Structure formats: C-alpha cells, structure tokens
Amino acid sequence: MLIYILKSYLIGICAAAPLGPIAILVLQKTLHYGHRGGFTSALGSTLVDTTYAIISIFALAIVKEFVNVHQNILLICGGIILMGVGYSMAMRDPFRKMKEDGGAPAATWKDFVQASLTAISNPGAIFIMLALFTFFNVGDQPQDLRVAPLIIAVALGSATWWFCFTWVFSRWRNSFKFRTLMWINRISGILIGIIGLALLAEGIYQIAF
Image (cartoon, rainbow, N blue to C red; front, side, top):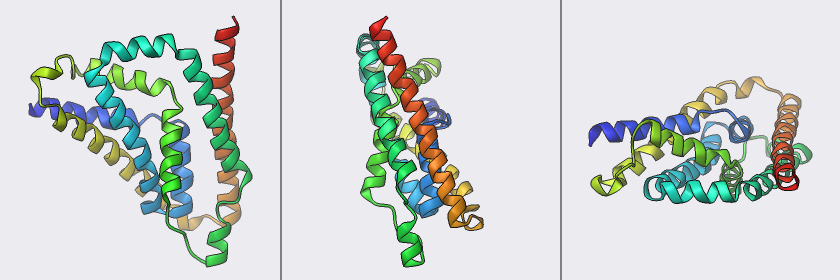
C-alpha cells in the first residue's frame, strides 16, 4: 500500500508541475500577495487536481469516452474562460489597493475560485491525470485498494509543488517595483488570453471542419 501512496504523491507533483495558464496566474498572485496569498490561490489548482484524481480512480473508462465525445465543447468553454481571465488580468490594476494601503492585501476566496476556474478550463489536464495514473499503474483496480490515502497523497503532492513554487518566486517579490509588477500582470494576462484564444479557435475549427 505504501508504494501506491508514494506513486500517488508523485502523480500530484507531476500533474501540478507543467507550466501553463495556471502557473502564470499563480505567479502573478504570488508577486501581488506574497507567498501565503499565492499559495492560497494555487490551492484552487490542487482542488481541481484532486477532483481529477478521484475521477481517474473511479471512472477511468467513462471519463475517457466523455472527454473524447465532448472534446470540442470543452475546448471552446475552456478557451472562453481563459480569455476572460486573461482580459481581467490585463485590463485591471490589481496593485491599486496595495498602493493605497501601503502594503499587500490578503488573498480572497475570489482568487481561489479564479485559480480553480483556470485549472478547469484546461481540457488537457484530465488527460494528464489519466496518463499519470496509467503510467504509475495506480487505480486499475480501485476496489482492491484503500482509495482515500491515494487521493490525499495526490492532493499533498500538488500542494507541495505549489508551496515550493510560490515560496521561490515570493523571494523575488520585494525586488520588483510597482511598474514592473504591473507589466508582469499585463503580460501574464495577455499570455493567458492568447492560450484561451488558441483553445477557442481549435474547438471551433474542429466543429466546422
């Protein structure tokens, strides 16, 4: 059983590690709020990873079929969500309150939800989780295993990655000026918007042709 728990912990790390829209978003939140705020936001991604882990263990075959059938719709919905997140990041000034208060505000539940939606908007994330469970040979026979420790191990692995990620980048936070932070925020928003536009275009193209 211990070997399955260790494998599940590695799955959590591997699922969180790829750089993408969620990493860009968490980086922006870390530079804005600091380590604690960035990590709180990143837990939204951990929640999604844990949910995908549960799905992968209990409904591996069903999820594969569902995602394959509805892949185009998922691409379009994911693209729209990412474009909205990117537009919000690029157009608003998230550091205005920090300037007025003279300090960094705390992360709110909205940041957690935003990170969760950004993670959900990536239709490839479920494929990554399914592939990892297949590669590590975990979840093939869930009825023969105690599933709860495996799910917890995946969550801890994901949380560990984001804790280290936000801690490292929070060390650089004080060396940035507000103008630099603002440009990082805008560029991050533009990048996320471009990724969302690409997903939307791919979904529309596949439906049309």
